[in-house]
Length: 370
Image 1 (cartoon, helix red, strand yellow):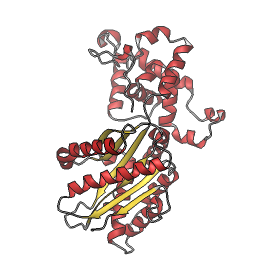
Image 2 (tube, rainbow, N blue to C red; image 1 turned 180 degrees about the vertical axis):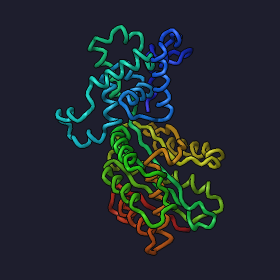
Image 3 (spheres, rainbow, N blue to C red; image 1 turned 60 degrees about the vertical axis):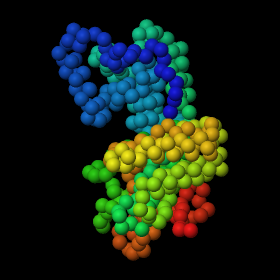
Image 4 (cartoon, rainbow, N blue to C red; image 1 turned 180 degrees about the horizontal axis):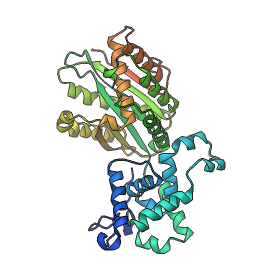
C-alpha cells in the first residue's frame, strides 16, 4: 500500500477524473454514447470478457496506466494472463507469442480514451504522448509504488454455541507484491471451474472433489505462504477469544516471517476476513485497536496495520481457502471418523503441514487450559 500522493495533474477534486468534461450529448454521437453506456454497464456487472472491457477496468483502477501504454500492458498481462507468465518463468521473449499483443491493447485504450472519452490521460500526457521519456518515467513509478505488504486471509470456526473450542485459520502472504500474480492465476483457475456456489466446508456432503482440487492448486503456490491455525477451548465471550487468538496468531506469524528473513524492511499489514455484520459493527474497531497496539509494542517502526477488511467470502478465492483450512482444523480436532468431511480435514492438515512440527511454512497451536 502506498502513502504517496498521485501526480498533481491527477488531483481534480471538483471533477470525476475518468470522465470527459465535455457535455456527453455534444461530444458523442448516438452510437458512441450507446457504446460508452454499454462499456460502463459491463464494468458495473464485472463483465470482463473482451479486451476492451479488460482495458477499461485497468484504466479505471490504476490511474498510472492512463498515461502509459507500457504500464497498461504490464498490468493487463499480470491481471488477465498471469497463467501464461507463470508458464514462462523465468521469462523468455518467446512468451510474447502467447500474450495479448501490445497493439491490440493499445488500440483498445485509444478507443476507450479517445472515442468514448472515458478514463482519459492527463492533459500533460496528451500533449507528450509520443515521447518515450514519459513512458519510462511512468513505468518506473509503477514498479516502485508502495511498501512491501503482509496480507492475512482468515476465517473463524467454532461459532456454534455448543462448540468445544474457538479457532482461527487461514493463510499469511509474506510479500503480497510477489504473490499477487499467483493470486490472479488462482482466481483465473477458480473462475474456469464453473462451480456455481462458493465452497463452504460445512456444506460438504459426499463430493469433496472441488475442495481437493482447490487445495491442490493452493499447494502449488505454497512458496511465500504461511499456513496458520490457532484454537483454544471455547469460553462464554467468544468475541474476546477471537480477538485474542488473532493477536497471538499475528504475533507468531510476524516472528516466523522475521526468522525467515522477511521483515528486513518496513511493511504494511492487511487482514482480510469474512464479513459478519454483527461482529463487524460491535468489535471491528476493538480488533483494529488491539492490533495497532500490538504492532507498536512488539514491532515498532517495522510493521504498520493498513486495515482489517471484511469481505463477502464468495468474492475472494483465498477466503474460500481460509474457510476450508479453519473448518478442517476444527473437524480434525473433534472427529476421527471416515465421513467425507473427515477425509477433507485430513487433506487440509496435509496441505497446510499443521501436523509437521518441522514445517517452517505452518503455524498450528491449540492452547490447552492451564
